Length: 624
Image (tube, rainbow, N blue to C red; front, side):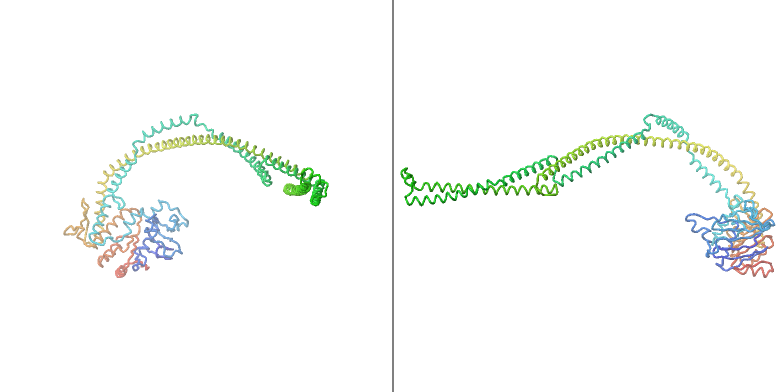
């Protein structure tokens, strides 16, 4: 497989960028921060996709790191490659990583990106193997001691299982942890709990069949509703009567009556005043009493005059009465006195008669004023007459009927109130029965919920029992896997150790230009470099040599994993930083001569291109 060209719509700092690759050696030159690592990451993302993390990890994942600086062209691109005699175009939109299209340009149609097709295009490599074999960087540690540790870890992982992504020791530890977790997941009491639950379910079902849980709620609710309707009807009737009573009471109170007795008393009072009026009027209309009074006054005056004359005659001594009185031995003034007394009585009687006539007139006026007030209030006309009195009595009779009607309505209200109280008592009784029924239904629901819960628990325990059986099978499988791995570990280590020593040794000899002709690894994974004179421990070689060993190991692993007819391109990302000029020249010549596939070197230095040009080695220069 080889890369042909690519186009980046938007990826990190790169946008609307096109790159074309050639067969053989391609040198991608760019200064620091020019986008080489971004271009390298784009190739990997186009081949394997990009997993988007969640939560806090999403802040620093690859998706967030390479989000386009310029969003107008989108977060997408395409990559063209050649494999098996066909040219394929891969298109991806990283905003939606599922939007992944593969077009076979040779046959001119889109093809489904099946696992078989992708395995063919990627020469059977997954992303982990790709990152640890053909995508080659430099050792990441900055110190010689750190580089030794990193290189030993890489070799130990490869030597244990033949894969940098699989570690037998870790796998065994994982299986032990899985076994412990499986044992923790088992529920030993599940069978006993299941039997107990089945007994509880049968008991609850028998209890729920009892008569006390028969539902009468609807019946009592209907009776309560009927009582409510009757109560509402009586309430409306009562309100109508109360309004009638209120209107009648208002009429009576407006006329200053409280009940029938007060009306009767008022009627009698009016009748008495009218009788007094008639009597006074009759007395005032008698003329004889006035004539008598005038006569009495006249006679009194005449008697007084007579008395005076008798006094005068008595003083002269010439009166017959004088002689008579003298003979009787009485005072000659006695007749005068008698006349004066008669005059006084007559005058007094006259004045008394006149005074009595005035009193009758006053009584008549008073009675007439009272009657006028009464008639004006109740008849609207103050004229005093027998017709008015008859109308007044009729009016009082109406008030009496109104008072009796009000009283009758009040008695009806009292009866309705009693009936309503009885209905309310019935309502309360129905309500208590409803509450009782609701409580029973609530208890029934709780029992049913408990029954459902028991059944649900029983079903869950069924699943637990099934899960226990499954876990038991898993435990047996784990035990078998551990036994199998124990048996295979020795075989894998021995076979891969032989391959690693042979293949990596051949590569190291070529990369180092014969300085080191082989590499050996003892049973404790200590690494030694072989020279013609001695074995050199890994700890004693230089950083540049460690980087060469690292390159040899990765190329050996790449040959192991890419065992098919095609090879993935080798991609070097600033892999030769620690190489001096001689080592770099040797490594480049060796790569050109020993690897027939496509090679892509990302570098921030110009010396690779200069050395290739000076050595007349053909290459394709790409500048970004």
